[in-house]
Length: 553
Image (cartoon, rainbow, N blue to C red; front, side):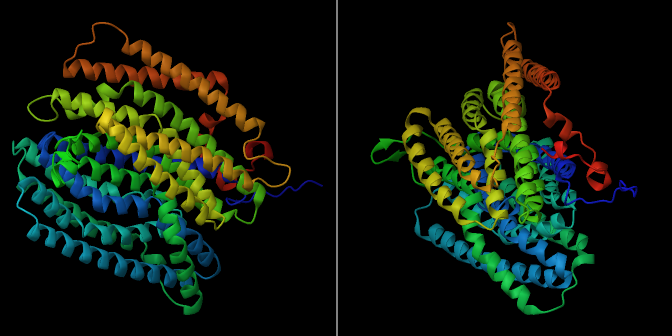
């Protein structure tokens, strides 16, 4: 007789709705964070403009922010979450002891790095000849470096929140930081205190204070789970395994962040070193870094809201299905398809609207970028935009390797990609200036994504393929919907008589976004793209409603 009992919740067995629901939760919170981050970037750009002070502030924030992205969105979570998940299933008290041990080790290491870096920067200030722009930049880095250990601690606590299903809370840390900086920056913008070095110092201090706030907030949310106890040996062994995996994970998932940091070093050359290199005039100037940072913020908007959201949601599921090859493959396929469904139209759309996308937030009125600064930054955005799909896909694929306990394969590839990116940087900046840095990053990310896709075929059990016919057809449909969207946006942008004023650029951007969104969704509906339905999938199905095998893939 058929089983007449009501369906029982089995969230682990049915990843279909849960992945989409968790990705949607992370996306919504991250959307708020990215809007706040964009507001922060716009305010600081308008306060400092495309000046040397703007470049110095961007570089000062870049150093600790590298660790936020590396740990909060990547390596630490990749090494920490599988161990914590396993321990929490068997003994929550041992899991807590393990988490606190990782937290203490990480604080010791990052505090030591911070102290060494502060001493090195102080020596540089005392030894090097006085230079106002360089000195301001080094002092701002010194001011904001303490944010690094704080944000690393928040990353460990955020990983714990993810394992306990609190994805919204774990994504709220940057919201706090951005909100605090926006509040202070808005005050200075409204009072007309523009381009003042003292404002840069105050905003840097606010960023550090926000790190304290994030740690306090996460610890408060985790209070019910912070009950250490049980045997210390399992926690110690898990801690050693995690730290052993961390360095390879940092390199594997941190390719984009490391490349971005290298971009900052090259863009800051005119301020830190001088206007020439080996007797040749350097192709960038004192405003290059702030123009680069503005473009980075805009391409990272769709990446953070959607691409990293999918990777964040999929990782605990992949870790949970590590011993179930079929479920693991189905979850990974779904992550790949969602990444491309979101990343491909984001790449095409952002490339097409790159000029108004920069002009609207960063120019207009008495503050902001100059006309030539807008054009240069838009060229940078165009380079970055071409590979939003690759940045997103790399996060998902790399996490698949980590969920299977393999951190060295992505690491070996990442080292090669960093070298390739640096070589392309050196070759392209002499012709494309700052845009050369963006195109180098995009080319490297695309190569990395294709190689990871080829290597990920090992995850398919016998008789299966990584991308079966159904997945291949779905990707073709996504490409077709993206092409329709790109055509629609291109037609809108080609309408004559768009005013070159700020209001004209705003109208162009709004029309492009609305038409692009409507055309893409309409095309996805007509083509029958399942990913659109997944993104609207309610959590209730994952929590207790039976899902047919065909719905899992």
